[in-house]
Image 1 (cartoon, rainbow over the protein chains, first blue to last red):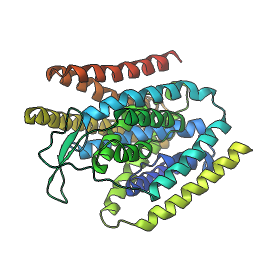
Image 2 (spheres, chains in turn brown, orange):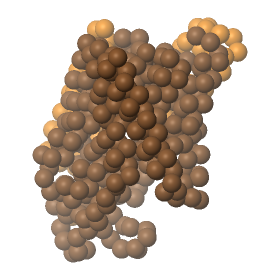
Image 3 (tube, each protein chain N blue to C red):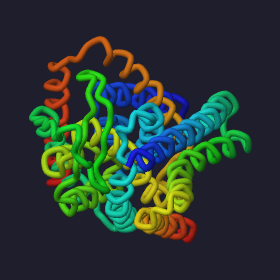
Length: 273
Length: 101
């Protein structure tokens, strides 16, 4: 284990964290292919290290949004039952999956993320202020409009299904999985985008923790590399939020979607090899 | 309703502080451990600090769920006591499975 490799992992974490914060999708989807393809780590090791950074990102982002009532603690906890079951199942079975199966899954998921990232449809899902949000819904103060936003939860089973899938994908591939469930919560379950994103950011930490201790015990988490990746991502996401306040670049989304499509093709070729 | 939402609001703030404390203490251990590893190579200090940092990182979300159980019990919100306990049981299975590896 060379010093140069650890420093490269830290730099990769920095870039991934920065991109993740700028795009609002978490950096795992960039970190895993970088560690795996560029630095040549085995896929399962890359995924396990990335999952450690997901835990750190979740804690930091949630600490930052806490106090604005954007995080729906009850909905999050209910969905976490499904996402942790998915994560645990993936954590146990991933050892038995071949690298080509994992590559195929990763190809499919990165392509799906690229499509979701550019075609992001946003529903407001806002009800009149007097309406009761119900036992699972929520209300928060929206800074832009200066008004109170009230929403109710619809089609809970769809949300639970999405959380189960996102949890399994997270555990197997080492990404947060937020981008897979946020659109579902927004489009079908009645959650406004910001509440869905804040709730998801809280959930991905617990979800990652339902599988990453198993990978750690199996020796897939190399401590110096994981530390370098975590510190890199923490620094990178800070920088990303700092840039993000200045420029909302649509072209960055298009460029990164193109990068993800290339990553997807690369993994498809690896899977078929 | 307002009582209930303000209770959830203060729970959100408490959990936010807990997560921040967890991730900051973990980052300090990881940074110290990595600095020692980079200068002196693998020593007992670097190994223990890196291990402690990673354990703190993984323990933080679990602790968040534990605190939530306690708070829902105090709010007498039994449905969410059960929900939160269910999440805790899944995490418990993960930890036990990991320890047996």
